[in-house]
Length: 120
Image 1 (cartoon, rainbow, N blue to C red):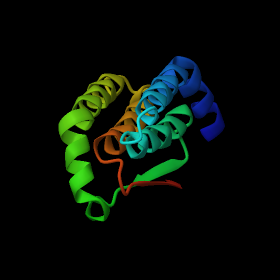
Image 2 (image 1 turned 180 degrees about the vertical axis):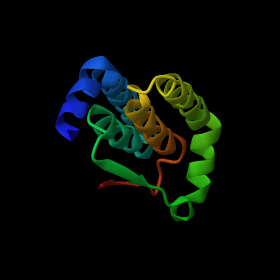
Image 3 (image 1 turned 60 degrees about the vertical axis):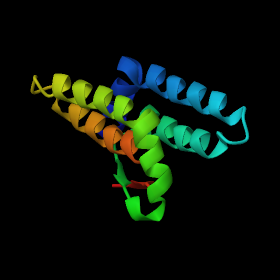
Image 4 (image 1 turned 45 degrees about the horizontal axis):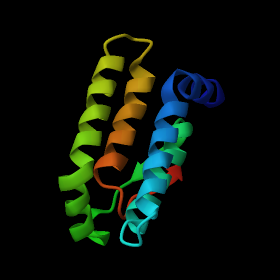
């Protein structure tokens, strides 16, 4: 079931979202200062391609200052987008699993530093 859900996710938007995260990671890695931010974008890109069967474990205390800077400059906009997508998907019964994945991605988009992606 996870495989089918990941295939549907990939076809219906995961490909484009993952490519957008990857492109943002590449752009951030062009500068030396942006490399840590780019690495977090690559982490989000890999989760975005196939989120079913994976979970995000957030550890805010590991890097609190950089997480706060991320939230102020990048994270809140992306988290808001995932929140809207998740709520929109949860309107229908069929979309609830996809909405839950959007909420999972929202967690990673909001606080990526110190977060790990583990198999569920």
